[in-house]
Length: 203
Image (tube, rainbow, N blue to C red; front, side, top):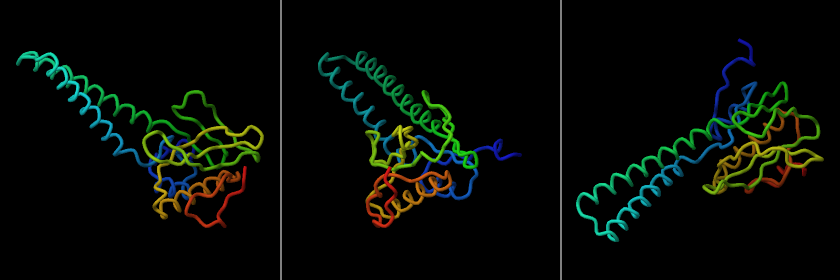
């Protein structure tokens, strides 16, 4: 089976990505990498807490009897269940969105990303890693830039704890190796907690 037709292993964590960039001829670069699991459960708990609060407000304000109390409990329970299902589906869709990186062809192919087309890299491209966030957790934005056009594509939002030097070192190494294998420059400021000597070239 040729490399192009071989199933692409989809890594979703930073350590898996760091290993894959060293070994694989192609790389799955998810739009969201690492973290996020506890955020889903927090959203679910918030949904059910809101439903419970609304339920007790209705019971108190309308002074419902036994049957009315039961009906509203079932209605709000159903709504909370539907909201929980919608959150899980949203997370699943996010896991299917990203870029297929083909190192030999120096090509990035979008998967499940509307408004993006295949990017073939050249000498004017660079790869940067900047502080980012999705409103849920602190994260680092992996961004493809062009010397004249500026930012071209936000490739991935990678969750890594800046308070853990080992995580930041893994992230830094991953970004450098990805740029190296794509034969483009690394741009932007150095990641926090790293030696100044590791500073990438400015864009």
